[in-house]
Length: 120
Image (cartoon, rainbow, N blue to C red; front, side):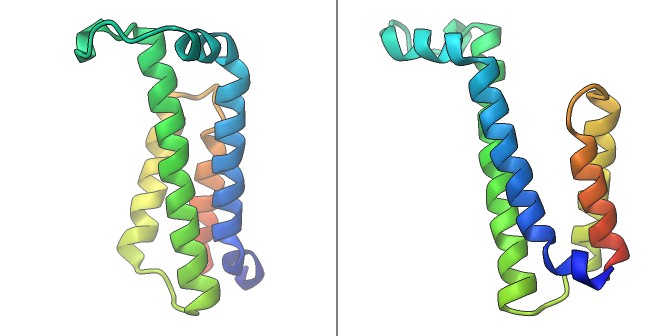
């Protein structure tokens, strides 16, 4: 378990990169449309729901990337053990993501969270 624990940050980074690419592949037409159009109204109400979903999809991938970099730095570079509340919070995040989006890849987060908790 300790071997997997030391590379859990890289696993989270890999998941976030996969999340970014899946979002770009799935929403490539929308992305091209956004890049070719001009913003006419700055209010959040003017953003269509599909565009909003795409933006949150990509923002969450970037946030997950930052968490992965932090976890990797703390475990492999600083050689610290992650605090138990962080590990439990990551498990809760994985459970919630899997419950609310069971057909997505959120089970990857759940596996990584379990490895974080068991590797302590």
